[in-house]
Length: 636
Image (cartoon, rainbow, N blue to C red; front, side, top):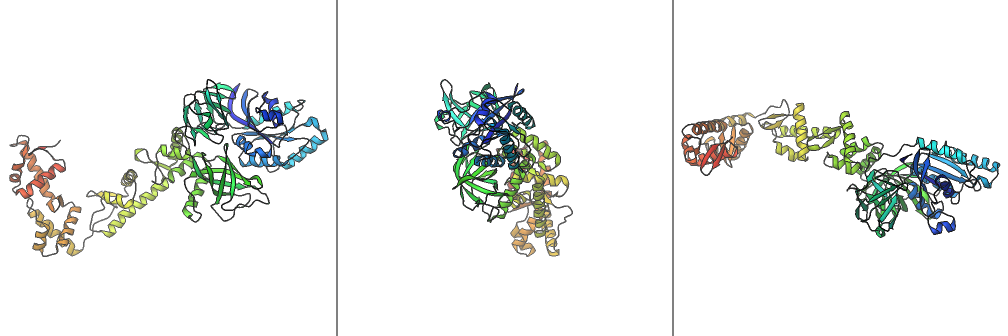
């Protein structure tokens, strides 16, 4: 016999035989409370292991009374298939309808119908109620499910019911266990010699003995000392299994139903949730902005307020995006199912799935925010779309695996596997330093940078291009992302490097005639005075132009790599730099015997100390020489 992470649940009106049928299936009495035994009615959730052929699954027995609907929701949230009970003597009752609505809203897709208490009625009554049930189930997920007449007292019909149950389980695909472990708390108690035990059905991932878990939103931590699955000792618990975890470092008195055991720092308690809601088609249902409701998800129940996001009115039967603000902090993840119930009269009015948690209210008038909310909801159809959305929506434009994992609530290893597929498809691109970006985002950034370069060409046509630092500042991009996009553009030939600047291919500097003539005159004067370069004031006086024109011209000549700035206000012709390097090297290798004394340099280039010292310091700055005291050595 093998355990599989599939959990079945019961559902149906009060006193329709749920607990008795579970006892026939499992041999377990799931009514554990004194009040339940005395009243013959389930109040709390009951858990039991169930053997079906060579498989062992879990069963959750939920209460049927309308006063315990919140407990029913807590149990039904974790199930994969349902045993839907209708008593032959009563037929379809109010909680029969409400339980079916809840199961549908929670996304349950498999079920078997048990027509119970057939020992109490005539065969004609059994046939009549069977027909009523079949008609009642039309258009629901149970419409093609077998209806199995059965008596928990005489055992009549049990074998046929058991066979149908086995066939249903074969059609259920066990839940994947590769998410982030999360177990909503059903109940907690203390066992002498062991400490706190927390029971429930994990809704994601798996955990092992020795793993550290955190109780949220309370915050207590503990390592798992022992695990029981379906009442048997196990080293691991998986998504969808009825389990009890021994966590001795957590005080059982602080544990409450609705809290969550989880691992790592992937989840945080929140009050705002973006949800996709479907409203049940009841005549009196009216969803109003700011409506107060009861909100159920996992095993949690809390007062909450609804806020319409897409329109003034919410159409009955249609799915619509809303925000919900809960009175109490909750822990929930994307795709978690929920139920909402009205306060007066108290009944189920709708449900759906959580899209994401948030820290603030979204404004319906914020078109961009609403569109982003829709994209997020649409992306939840599969992991590939969700991860692609997470990357595309990152404020920086790119994300690392850890960031993605926290947003989509998946293990980094699982995220990496999906990323490999997305990269092969070309939808996601790998940037430098472990960053991933959506192809549309990369295209936008490439267009942005090329546009900035083009605008710079238009504004400064006389320069060979834009400096890297200036482009980075103008783009507003993260430097790591910026460097990666620049590298892509250079590799593709969409931009080029010209004179240590970035330029669009085919761009040629354009000068006005007077400007070009002045550039030629200034460049000639620097060339004629290689080691005694003129100042801006000297040039302005000699050429009879304003000093601002000289400074602009010198900047252009620096851009063209004809002049070099040695220190503020002092420029040398590039030929002077090259000749100075050659003379230093020759001196060091000959009469300098491996070094150059600072005092000798002005004689090497035949100039004054005013120009020699700044030029020699510049050689240190660019790494051509290395200074020790007043002595220079060739570097490298």
